[in-house]
Amino acid sequence: MATRSSPINLKPETVNTPIVIAIDGPSASGKSTNSRLIAKGLGYAYVDTGAMFRAFAWFCLKRSVNVHDSTAVAAELRDWNATLECVDGQVRLLVDGYFPEKEIRTAETSAAVSPIAAVLEVRMWMKEAQRSCVKFGNLVMEGRDIGTHIFPETPLKFYLDASAEERSRRREAEGVKDDLAARDQRDSTRATAPLKIAADAIVINNAGETPQQTSERMLTEIRRLMAERK
Ligand code: DC
Image 1: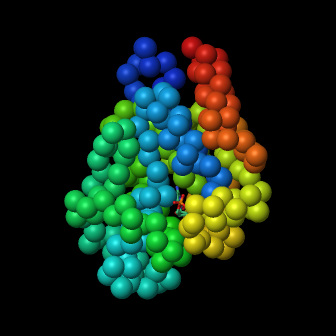
Image 2: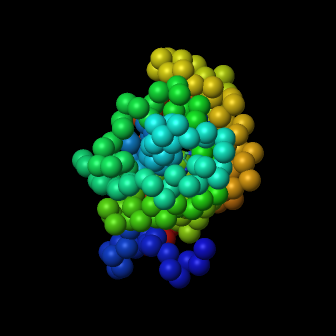
Image 3: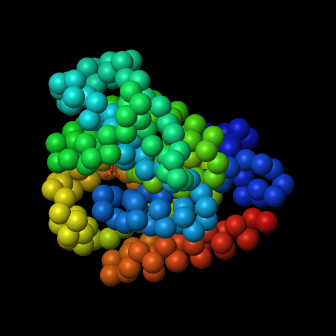
């Protein structure tokens, strides 16, 4: 993507364009907790792109679409009435004006989200919607391809990780039923925008750390990168 048309700017005092902090990593790698802490600490809007994919998976399930039929899934994009809003610093995707907060976290939605997230048309729709979030100001955006595909031009990229065992333990502790290994395998091997580490991402393995420790480490790196570019 051409940097000339980039919405990213690390000198907000000179040019008034939003800063984007990209946070990627596998399931249960601490993206949500740390992204929220960092967004709060910096006063940026928080965008959970997984929730956007989940909302579309929920919509497809509600309409009894076979989520493994990519043509049928792509056709649903024409029918869904989705809008973005930012409430209390959190960007949410509404479907027909409704935010399906609980519905997107069920085991059924979790199982359906990986196949729909592999559909090219869905990813194109999501990319446009996710890039449009700069209308809400500076962002902390978490997902699987934020640093590699959505905002590759941002120099503020993180890749969070922890061992598969540790990540499964975290999900169990949350009481969430989720086949992490299967989802990670699909998300990392799909043809379009698979989960991978951006060449210039800061990789943080946060096993054994508290979210406060991890987010502090990340904020230190953010301050360092911002100071370097002033
Ligand atoms: O972060 P999460 O577990 O809520 O994400 C749900 C699914 O959405 C995940 O299995 C992969 C997909 N996803 C994606 O492909 N790209 C993103 N930027 C975010 C999520």
